[in-house]
Length: 544
Image (tube, rainbow, N blue to C red; front, top):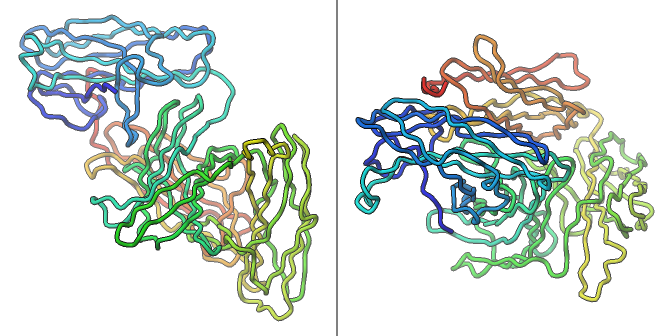
């Protein structure tokens, strides 16, 4: 792939530096700046969008020529966006954009350049491109081979109104021990197979042989705390630090990525870890199996208080949203709540005798677009203690009824519900704010995100609602993240839950991030936290 090396170079003899937004640096000697550096628009098929970009020249001694070129957008393996020649990107809007090819500016001059974008009638989803502005050297480029020509790029992101979910596919998984790291990593290659730009948040569960509980490995975040994003048709490699060395052997690796609206992108790999002296491993997709996401449970958490010898029954309602019948079966598993509030079940069948769970019926055929019900019965044994929280999971596995194809290919649907039994004397929640943290990619940069960590020190699940707000000290609000906007959100007992709010670009001034959390059923009112920062970044006068 031929990629254009782009950075907002402000000095002719500069070496390569990291890209920065035009809002964060004014053009200097012999440089150039543009604004905005990102143009986003919502379109209907067949319509035309018109706008402009502002180009500001540095202090050139003579009038300077600048060339404007429309290019495709591509993503490098690490997720970085870069302009490439037209035809090398995916879902390109380059052919829709009209802009003048050249302009001449005197030193310090600003010029508004008109842009138009003509959306085709058959367009749907997200399309992207770059408008690249670069200096035309006064002498032939062959004579300035060692000079990095001042170049800036404006990203154009067009969202064409359409229906359709986000789609991500995990293409490969490998286990490696890079020389640059002290611990091994899992490397997951993820591709956006849909029509929308998609953020990436999820984890990898590694089930060892023997059916023990899995090790959980999180997909990484960007250095500024934001989620990585993958553009349609692009793929990104994620290095996921494990933090310890996995013993040699075979593992059932399951990748799950949150797509929102109760949907997940799922993949399953057979991971083989080599000998201890190499610490390398390869993974292959589990043979003849795909993971589907059209099987839902109405409720995934059932919490109750039981005295020894007592029992309780309740329905587990399942929905088949696919277009074909599913054969459903159930398994009762031991479960545990992780420190981050997530939960996992063991690979083997349940062996906890203090808490018994039965499910009836143990299987059913659920027609397409229909709802079915399993009934679970939970019984706490008479000799069980009454001072310990106990957990179980009911795993629901579905297979497409018509999946017995000649090639053996079948679609697997795998979901489950957590059952939590709390002792009577400890059946209360106590949710507090543990930390409100601002995350920066560099100490000199404004924070890119705010992380709110909640901790439940009680013995029962707490249900919360609240918000995070970014505002000026004077009161002007820039961004709001609603927590539990439609329904109360659970925070599991003795666990944490982290909420992540991306922060927008702001100009100079004093800013505050505030968090407010309300817990259902308490009389103590809300809990609050605050973090402040001073922005010293500014928008150049020519681009205001």
